[in-house]
Amino acid sequence: MFERILIANRGEIAVRIIRACRELGIRTVAVHSTADEKALHVQMADEAICIGPPPARDSYLKIANIISAAEVADVEAIHPGYGFLAENAHFAEVCRSCNIAFIGPTAENIRAMGDKVVARQTMKKAGVPVTPGSEGVVATKEEALEVARRIGFPVLVKAAAGGGGKGMRIARNDVSLVQSFMTASSEAERAFGSAAVYIEKYVENARHIEVQIIADHHGNVAHLGERDCSIQRRHQKLIEEAPSPGLPAEVRRRIHRTAVDAARAVDYRNAGTIEFLYDVESHEYYFMEMNTRIQVEHPVTEEITGVDLVKEQIRVAAGEKLSFNPHEVRFRGHAIEFRVNAEDPYRGFSPSPGVVEFVHFPGGRSVRVDSHVYSGCEISPYYDSMIAKIIATGRNRAEALAVLARALHEFTLEGVATTAPLGQAVLADARFARGEYTTTYLENFMQETFLINRP
Image 1 (spheres, rainbow, N blue to C red):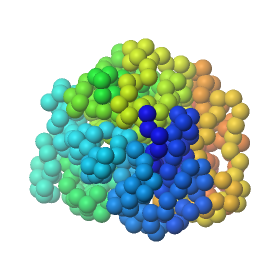
Image 2 (image 1 turned 180 degrees about the horizontal axis):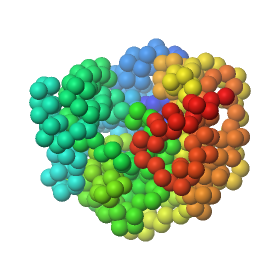
Image 3 (image 1 turned 45 degrees about the horizontal axis):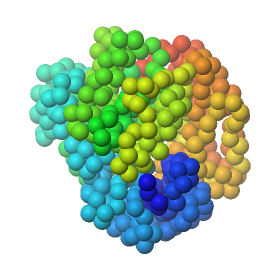
């Protein structure tokens, strides 16, 4: 097992990793920009090293600075968390060349699944169902039109190197397709350094289902069930739960088996997530992409399985076997997570940086809070707006929803606007309570209910 690990990230995921390391008896080294000098992860780690000015490109995305910090601190491994360099194959290769373990999949895994076009082709060869779409990158608007007309509107134009909803546009006719093609290409170039896009069929009445995978270097590949991430705005998730409500038992079994097959097809290592679109009308599901990292919503999986995913990541990277038998995983109860962002949902989700004057997080039975925020801290405009995750568990979905509603009622934060009021409104909606939702639910709810009833 490792003795010292550097965490190449910030915010709540850095805090989460530090906690796991402490329980494993591993010393931690935090890195931070000058803007994060007083951040919670800096205060919690055994050692902290400044790696640059506030912009991420000059600090958290600066590979040379992170590797220099790792060498100065004499660490054996680096955990990238999620975001920043977590899915950067070059960073994984640099770690390997410096004899530093990368706590994540191999560079080959990241490269194979990071390009969405290559990933689709790989999954197709492995017999995994994929949505109808282009065979590869679509280079011109004329080619885009040909593909869209062949598979039928509506379609999605998606960045080949993308993720997180960036470089993604829906097109419903020829005119909107041309505009979507140009917009998505431009956004992809800015966000990922590549303007390459591809096209796939847009499934109107769908749920976003993802299956958690963890694999070691000894041939063990385990799935830890599925999560439903359909409550999202512009492809950014707001609420996630496990298991997915309303997923037929046979579909659940098949989608789990497909996810394991997909992981084996690329000889996958460490934690990852296979993402699918599930058509609620046809009961068919389609591979979307693979996230080669730990996910924001991993706590709901941990709560229903009892498996600590971050600890498993560390064990796998250290060459150990999974600490559990993949065939003996048991799922207990229901868990649901709400992401609290420093954004104003009444004003188009505009960012709300500033000083947190006071914060009180909920507690009590069946409530877990993952956060890096404390009274007096500053929410920086330089980084992602997520400031906390509130996770509730129950013996069943109804009980978990009641716990989360109570927790959000207790949650208090003064100084910056948050998405908490939207979460309370969604939990009070009868349609959501019945589990009757798809990926279009939140946008419709915002327009038809939430903004109309604003205080």
